Image 1 (cartoon, rainbow, N blue to C red):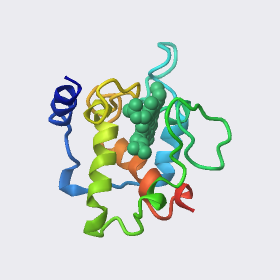
Image 2: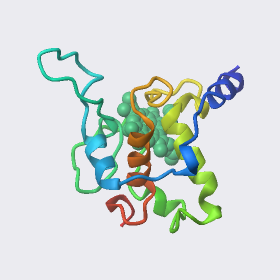
Image 3: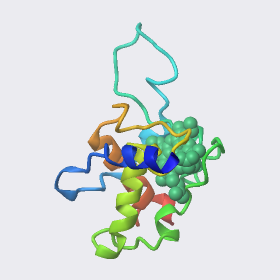
Image 4: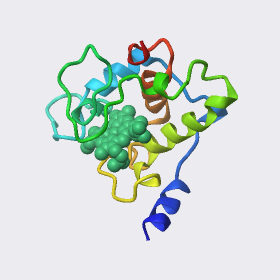
Length: 144
Ligand code: HEC
């Protein structure tokens, strides 16, 4: 049953245009810090894009000391998985797994507590590319 739920979720993943997985890690860090849009409804302020709230559940960059622990630490995420050059085909599996996890977390864990950022249209493709860079760009503080 769990396998079937995961397979159905995996089939919904939309892959990035042109195989462009990584954006700008600086933008990714801002998004990861930003919890706007999903935890409250603020109609008085000008509408703005959703934040990604990753730190609510994960440790990510070592500079941020306030983080939740519902999810595993993502510090050194790319480094620990050997992504030293994202253009290297050896990194393809990691890029795909990470993109799929961000797009639809249930593709890899049927009962995941992690929001399905792409699938639920909480974040758009460019925002997910920035978060991917935060986790996987060798220059990101996450991988120092
Ligand atoms: C509500 C809590 C929550 C939020 C918010 C959240 N996650 Fe997660 N995340 C989890 C949990 C729990 C797991 C463990 C696997 C699972 O249950 O899906 C996880 C797993 C992951 C994994 C896989 C880790 C591995 O080693 O395989 C990645 C990558 C990840 N999250 C990235 C992110 C990013 C980036 C964000 C922000 C866009 C984010 N998460 C937001 C809860 C969360």
